[in-house]
Image 1 (cartoon, one colour):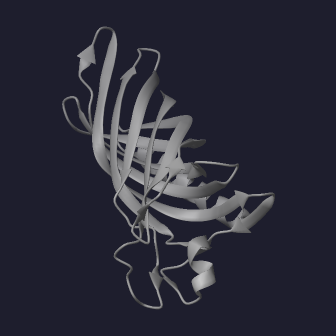
Image 2 (cartoon, rainbow, N blue to C red):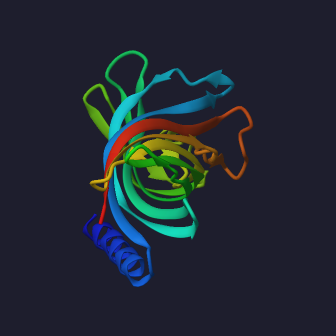
Length: 213
């Protein structure tokens, strides 16, 4: 975990350096709450899970493309997962995410409206299944050989699309609503075979606050 933290810190430092090196490019921080779920099916039966709360925190850079248009790459640490419909079971997954949003920031009132869309790439850095007093680490793999391990295994790589809507005030603080639709099937293959009736995808929405330097 320490090495993962140091690697993420190095990426953030490089991004900060790149942001300050470019003319008119700004650097920002963002943090907020996630409400996430896992949608799909197992063996042809729909997943019956509930949303769970998590959080996200990270940095981004805004690079101007044209008047009021920007590209915003970033790096986030984000927690996702879902809760069992009954009982206290939970799936907790931590991701290092790289969103790249295309922003439209027209002047509205004394500040700017934030409208954004773009892709994201997520890499799972840890996860657990919790329930009935037991914790079990998620095995991140693309292929499972043992049937008993299949329900506790997931693919590490996630990707999908972002949407955001918000407002940036004149004091450089901002607030925004975020939505993510996962497009990657997180269910691994079983003994080299893709299971057509088994799939699982991340979905989430949230609220965050930010500040631009």
